Each structure stands twice: as structure tokens, then as C-alpha cells.
Image (spheres, rainbow, N blue to C red):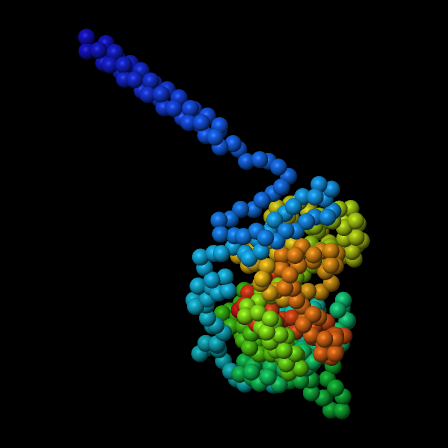
Length: 429
């Protein structure tokens, strides 16, 4: 008799639970109907409105190309956040650590007296700067005397500047004197100039790679070797003391020559006269860079045809899927996208922005949305006269050095592409 009673009690409880669940479901349905009646869903119109509790929307950018005259509203003052957008709370936790350890032997103790390494760099200013940095470390690995590196004067940039036109060569030699012996030119052999044996090393060559590939040649070829097209020819992973040497070269030994420093200082002062704070944007949007990226920037068939024509310069260029590249975040941001990102971070239209760039694909048409977001838009060409820039105008590396200084001194630095300059500045800052 006990078993039927238990079953009857079980069914009774189950029935009660079903009734309670039905009552709750009915109540929720009534509540949902009530909310739907009094609070209708958002209107899916063609106008897109950005809302923020603490943001004002005064400036309006109209797309004249659109037949429907759609309006995109942007904040005029930026978001008012609960933090200081001109400083970082974490800055105090970062510090320089480039000093050599006690076990790092002095140059005079390890340098072979008749072993010389010469370097011919490649690329633009910041790519060459990376090559110079790696050249010092390569000389240290080989226990060789480094000859002041030769700058690239033949590639796309066609800049005739030599090392002394860009950098303070005497400071470079003296600052690194305890790490690597550096001379300005190869010594003479009797009445003739010493001609080094030229060769290349593989990219990302490790310490062992240099000892196996370059040192035997140094020993056999009268102890003088020149490494050509020296870009990215040293591995990223090295002994800690060699990495610290890299930092000493890049962030301390490579100082710009006085004419560049003085002009750069003047440009910074003129930005400060306009505003207490300023943002520096390194904008890489040159046609060849966009073509190399393999991305689509919304310019339609005209853009695709123009960039395809440029892509033919590189026979081994891998063809990318533009949609996939963008989804994976590998495409450089457009000027408009950079502006929208800065607005989202809280920087308003009153902010002053310095733009360091080369030729921008699409010219003023491409820059128009960024200038609408940030009307206080400057470059070295707008805050200095042609007369003041005269000695630099014909030299792309010297002009790039001026941009480097203004970006380095800015309160906020941002880039649309993680290239050499962006990485170097990130390390310095």
C-alpha cells in the first residue's frame, strides 16, 4: 500500500509545479506585451545616431556623395571620461633598463685589433636606424671594429644624406666606446684604401649564424667585410646583454645632428604655442604601402586597378584575401578610421593634431573626414615656412627625422600601421 501512496504524492507535487510554471509564464507574457505597447522598438531608419550620456553632438559631417543626404553626427568635445586622457596611470611602472651588466666585458678587452665590419643599410630612415642598431650588436658578436654605417642613397627615397647629415657621429662613437670600437672609415693599407669583401647574411641571423657565416670570411678575407642590404639581419632573440646593447644604441647613442634637433625643437614649440597638449599621428597611407598590404580601402574599381598596377612591382608578392585581412585586423586604418577611434577614446574637435606622413593616397579627399573630426590639423609644412625647411626639403630622411622629433615630444602618439617608426617611438616613450 505504501508504494501507490508515494506515487500519488509524487504526481500531486508534479502537477503543482506545472501550475506554478504556467502562472509565471503567463505573467511574463503579459509584462512583455505591456512593454512592447508602451515602449516600441528603435526606429531602423537611415539616420545613425551615436548616443552617450556625457557627450555633446554639435558638429555634423554631411556626405555630399550620398543621394539620400544621410547625416553622420560626431561629438564636438569628445567623451568626458572618468580619467585623464593625457596621461597614463601605468607610466610610473615603466623604466629604462639598458645598462650593461657587470659581466659584459669592455670593448677594449674583446675587440680584435685588425678585424673590421662595415655595413650598408637599406630602406627609409627608421628602417636604416634599425639596421644601424643591429650593426653595432653584430660587430660586438664578431669582436670587430665597426666602421660608421653607410646610409642607403639609391633606393626608392633617393636621399643623398650620409650618416653625419642625420646623426651626431661623434656622440655615436663616444657613447658606445665601452661597448664597441667604432671608426669613421677603414684605415689605409700602405698607400691604398682598404677595400672590404662584400656579402649578405640571412634575415634574422642569430649569434651562432654570425659566428658560422661571417667570422670565417673575416678571418680569410684580410679581416674586413662589408654586409650589404643590412635590414632585419639580426635575430630578435638574443642574450640579454646584447638586447640591452640594442637599446643603448637605439635610444641613447643615435642622436640627431644639431640642425635637425634645432628645427625639430622649433616645430615642437610651435605646436605647444597652439595648445598645451597635442596628439601626433604617424599616418602611413602611401600608394605603394596600401598596394603591398593587399587590402581594400573602399575606393571601388578605380582604387583596385591603381593598386594592382603598383603590385606588379613585386614579382613575389603574395595575393591576400582583402576581406580576410580586414577581419583579422591586418589592414592599416584609414585616416577617417583613426579619427573615429580617437573620438571614441574621448578626444574632441578642440584637440590639436600633428600629422607625420608621406604622400597620402587620394590626397585631400582622403584626409577630409579626419580634418572634419579634428579641424586643428597641422604638419611641418603648415607650421614652418619653405624658407625655414629649405635645407631639409630635398632630403626625405631629414624630413622624416623632423617628424620623428615632433612625434617623440607629443603628449599622445598614435599610428595607423605598426611599422618601424611606431615601434621605435613606443620603446622610447
